[in-house]
Image 1 (cartoon, rainbow, N blue to C red):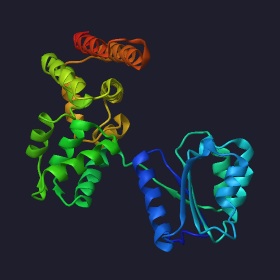
Image 2 (cartoon, rainbow, N blue to C red):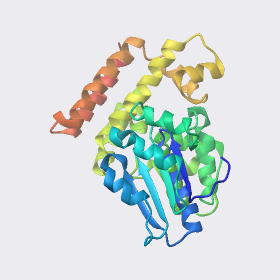
Image 3 (cartoon, rainbow, N blue to C red):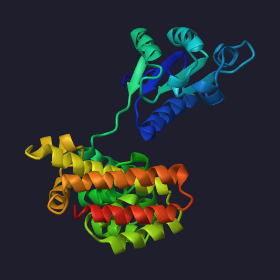
Image 4 (cartoon, rainbow, N blue to C red):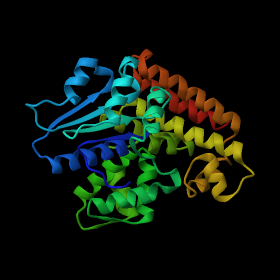
Length: 321
């Protein structure tokens, strides 16, 4: 994106990945504070605004310093404020640095289109494709002052999945705990095998491969150390959907198969191996068991530990269907 002054301009940031949205906003605010360290800073949700509040934040005053305003969740902006925001964005006064953030989805798309038509500068932040995630992990390592090789990056993804915030946090923690400058696969495996951040993906991986005892042990350890039940059901749902897509896309080859399934190419070997012990019917039954457990841990279940243990046993049983 072409460099722009922070004041006297509006920047519209769009995308679905929260980590990248936050980083784009941080960069914009940092640039504004470099231009004017004394500027007043306001960061708020569009749903909390009314007309008078918006005017007071963005209108300027003879008695005020320059103002930095970030408005997030643009899709939640009340409809009666759309024209007001559009007018401010089209003619931003010199004492205002305005950043608008739209997190994706259809809500607010009308305003979004009007802003783009008005040629308000837009920055789109997109998450990398699953097969590009190792590059993200390696880059995070460089940013944290350590060298992570490709095998180690893949091991981190295997342990945590593709949630970018979780991956960035894990790399930062690894860099803080392991300061000799280089992190390999062995270090990653040793780190996660004894660490409290046992993920739902590691538990799911054991179940899918028939290691129910190990999965139950990891589940109890994870729950005792504060891992949320919904993260575990989410991991199971993600992995099982991937396996289901693999069954549906068989016959396709190479990178095209990886794109259809939505996984990194190296994961295809795991899916191919799992497909020899699973059936499409078994995957469907397992997904239903996970969906039921997910609903229960989100509200109906008084005992999430029991619910998740039962889910693991039901998913394991589905392997034999």
